[in-house]
Structure formats: structure tokens, C-alpha cells
Image (cartoon, rainbow, N blue to C red; front, side):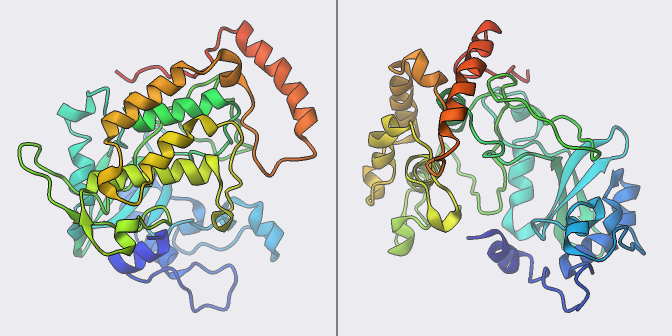
Length: 350
């Protein structure tokens, strides 16, 4: 289920605008703008675009809006960026429906007991706010994150670290505070190892480990529907999770997906047998996540150092490849001199 499709079904169709003014706030933006003072009172400052009475600071023209802070719209109608006034920490403010249970699941992984668990890699909830005059919705405040594929993975080892954290659950930590002025700088993942978060629990379920896990009907996730979803049959939901993870690796790295503008990346064929088993049509034939973790670790142990440090070349890259390959040799030498491991190792949070 896509982001807007989910929003329309769960929250309501808000993001369309009837205004003929190209720079006017959309309906979803108007909702956030109407809550500007409320959020400010609770310590969160949205961008000038959403302040009451806002007028564009830029002159008419598409390019002018693109290069102006208050010309940037929101990417998702139910998620807003803001700064925590007390320390300028950048946060994501999400509007959720109480009936989905997302607030409860997110808070479950953020409570004192689970917050100190080094295997917990779910996004931390900083605060939950009520929506004035609406008991059916809540506002969840979380750290603002960067997309996992931005910037691109530079080496095979950097992607291996990402797979490890997704499969084996490594520690997590929040992002640094944000400065809106100037260009955003970043280092390679090898030089400054990141950590990865699981987010969005609107379609998640909680199960009692002491009781048998019930079968569930699969939902579309990440733009893909598992075979059991197409067949409209129920199955073990954990088997569906394995399929979705395998599909992500296949479409983002192994094969790519032209419909989602994913070219794929060279150098990950060593994962093909494991991924093929993860995306088997029969849910009962898919390996459990414990087996996926074990097999993945065995595959990684067999990779030579030069393979891990080799470039993760996009499959749509052609003319620049020789030049980037030469530069990569010098860059790799500098990372080795700095004693940076081939598989980045982030510092633990706790």
C-alpha cells in the first residue's frame, strides 16, 4: 500500500487542493498550519511556510520555489518536519489514527524496558500529543531520519552492514540535529557508520509469545504484494515479513525495479540463493528469520576483504565508471590508513 493510499484509507483524503494558486498550501498542509500554535506551545517549531499568515518569500517561478526554504512542501501528507525549540533538534511529527494501534506499538518499543535493549532498533517516540478536538487521532513526535538509500551505498561492505542490522537487529541511535542553512554535508558510511531504524507501525501487530501465532492476510508493503496476498489466503505473518525483506533486497540491489526507478547494484549475487528462498511463493517454504540470519552470516564470512571494499556500482552507471573506479582506489587506501573496517561498525547507543 502506497503512502498516499494508506493516508486516504486510514486518515482521510487531505492532500488535494482546489486552489489555482501554484504556491498555495494544500489541504494537508493547511491542517498542519492550523496546528502551528498548538505545536509551538508544546515546544516544536514548524518551518515559516506553515506559520499563520505566511506569504512566499520567493518571486513567482518554479525554480525560485525550489531554492527557497518556504517553497518546500511536505512529502507525505501525514508527516511534518519541525525543530524542537529547546535544542534545535530536528523531529518528525506524524499524525496517526488511534484505531490502527500505531501509537501503542511505537510506545511499546520506546518504554524504559525496551529502550535499553541493544537489539531494539525501532524508532524512539519522543512524545505523544493529543489532537485538539479529535479523540480519534494522535500526534507522535520522533527523531527525523534520512532515507536509507540516500546517499547511495559506496561499497559492498556498507550494504552488508545495512543487511546485518535489518536481519540481526543491531543497536540504534538518533540522528544529529539539523541546520537548515547551506548545503547538507555527509561522509561515507565507511567513515561515519550510521545506524538503521524500523519505522511506521500502522499495519503492525503484536503477538503473545506464549500463545500460537494466528494466521493473517497479507497486505501490500513497499509497493509489493506477497503471493499469499494475491491469492487472498492467510498464513504465518512472519513468513510474509521474510518475503517483504527478500523482495526489498531483490528490487533494491539484485535486480532493480524499473517501475520504482531502482536500477539495481552490481556485486550482490552471493545473496541470490538466500533471497530466492526468502521470496518463495509458498510461505511455508520460506526460511524463518533465525535461519536467514545464520545463512547470511555464513555468506558474509566467506567474502574476501577486497570484495567488501569494492565499489557498489549502480547498474545504470556507464560513462563515469572508469573515473570513479580510479578515485575509489585512492579513497579505499585512505580508509584503510584510517583503520576503518570494510563492514562499518557503528558505536552502540547503550
